[in-house]
Image (cartoon, rainbow, N blue to C red; front, side):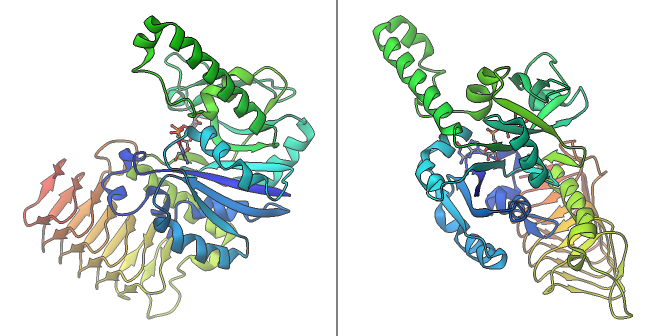
Length: 409
Ligand code: GDD
């Protein structure tokens, strides 16, 4: 039996995702028309003998209630949200719900970060993990040497795939092989976390004896029940024949910023071509818009037949797209209205916003640059014939003049 756990974090995390995380928890932000966390959940649902999926976070329970009940029904697998009273770190969070996780006596626990975009090759990874025979297997990926320092960098044995060395976000380059935030563990992971908790307790007791050290470490010290999977477990246990790696050759990205959510939306839409073609708009027939490449349109959205949409566009519930509008590489959220002949390119348009006739909302398309795409927060009004380029507009603003490279507060 297998139990899957997805770490979703909480409201104090995901700050780089603003202003889009102001109205919805980041894990529920729509990517390719589905909540971010839906993609790893869907991938878990294909693991043989999966009995339960838990989401662990410190968001309010009610924020996830509707989603977990609908996805449980849809997939016919129980999905449950477990709330931490405060952040315990990625391993501490897992540990605090060990009784729930062990209820089904799983032989394996699949653990995933919710903010990664991947094809999640979980069944193959599970097979590899069983062959290695260790406590845990990490999904790893090669990235450019310049970007590696945003991740856990690691060295693996090319023959046995054993994890030999692990450093979390090092200042000096270690390796371009990085941790993808996707793991398979045996239940022994709980003893490994327990060991760390014990060491921390012992150290805290020692510190109480030495008041000098206490004075100097007080500001840096994390709470004693806070355990990070990467620094506290992976680093010290590398090279001990307990941890192994499985390299993905398919797509993998991290979703920390709105720009990356737009890029990942495109990656998942192109994956839908293979896995869920029914979710893609076809553009067949005279009464539908012209569709270019991979496009998702929610069934309740109204898209004028003379508009042209795609590639990489996803349009959420109740959006209205007017005659002659042109949309390329964008995410249009619920209840947005785009009027006649407006153009939206390399942008995210927030809930209930409206874009006037002949207006243009666009970015230059650099997903990594701070102002590489244009983002409109909730209920932003762009009046007729206004041009918005490479800008971020906070919620509830009205734009009646054109702007470029601006953050409008
Ligand atoms: N429930 C809960 N409680 N979730 C948490 C907590 C916590 O206290 N802390 C972090 N998370 C969740 C986050 O929401 C995210 O999904 C995941 O755990 C990892 O978050 P961080 O610990 O902030 O690490 P990171 O995202 O900067 O980096 C991690 O992931 C990278 C891959 O995306 C590291 O493991 C890196 O090594 C790795 O490359």
